[in-house]
Image 1 (cartoon, rainbow, N blue to C red):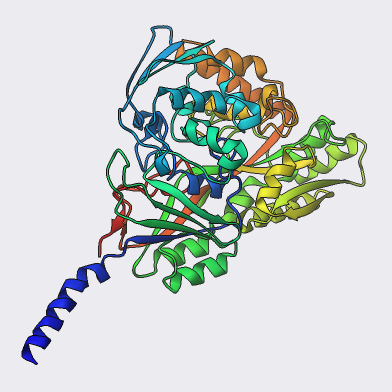
Image 2: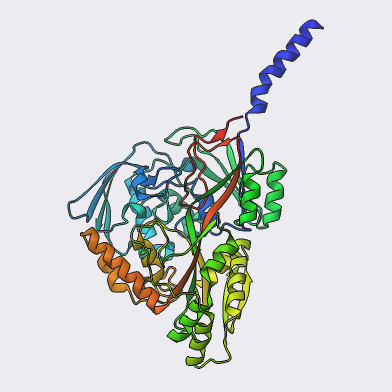
Length: 514
């Protein structure tokens, strides 16, 4: 009996570490769907947060940072550039393995990835790469990029973000683009396992990861669009980390909860009201000016919460290289808004239509905008649709007014190029996110890209912003920080100051500490 008791105790002790060591992580996303699973096609917030664990770039931002000064090697060990900044050469790590047995990642994969990112049929970000003249592989572990003109944001275009995500050529060749969009293959610390829309997406550890075997065996992202349901799942212990409500009350409540760490992190996504200038009555400058004067940025800031947001300063977000901090945004003036509508021939007001996502944080913002516009005699009719459908329809010129909330690599060139250059006008062969059809600052945006003098480059970016604001192509309203919460026992492996992919990244070193 004594021997049996001792044996039982020893067995229990031996089992304790295994029981205590939790090796699965559950994350809650504020969406019913992450969208297409191809990193070159997905620009949605939930999709980026999910896919970032699967892919690497040639370079990356140091985890937890968002400033370009923290760029470091990723799939490339080192790089050099020519004196004129037009030729960049990258030396790749050897032995990096693609997921699910698709072989070693080499320069052929990198060249394929960048050419794929630059092709409209396979990339939402194709217009970012128009200044790429050639991408080639001199040998198995060398990648050479030749540019038409020097790009101030080149490293941001080849990092683990948007078109810079590196895919495995053999996987695309075998499955085709359609198959790849359902089963993405990369080189990151976690490999794709399973995805059920409106339920969950599951990743598993990539034990051959070049930085080391991940601590977590699997990471599950649950799709829970309801803020209340997501909060309840977190409180019940079903979630370890979640995208939480982005309002003042929720932030304070989470921050004061024992055993929970609240994260208010950069980059802030800037909410911008884009006005399609090709659609009457928005083709009238006075109407666009009236809309701008009818909107109250400070009121929206107070509505969204002073600890979790900030008023927009320009058509480029605050903190980006090249932001015009004293931009001449039109001030809130309800009387002037009504006067301008009358002068434009609409004394009885106007009605505008917008297609909008059902994501709660964005929808409540748009409802607040709707209420502000109503006071000036502007009736905004909102048609709510699921988030992935929203992204699809606004790129088809189906909405007079588009509310787009976005963060990008923090250099003015990318934000200006994607949202305000004629190359990016939606519905065109190189269209991306220029919903307003704005093209007044093309010359300044293009000239800044190849301007070697930093002061002159800055002046060009500033002038571009002034022109866009004078034309009222879009109305920047509010910048909202990323709001996440996690158990205080979760150690992500780095201090979370920022997350360019709009969600804290799960690394190979991430683990529970008790």
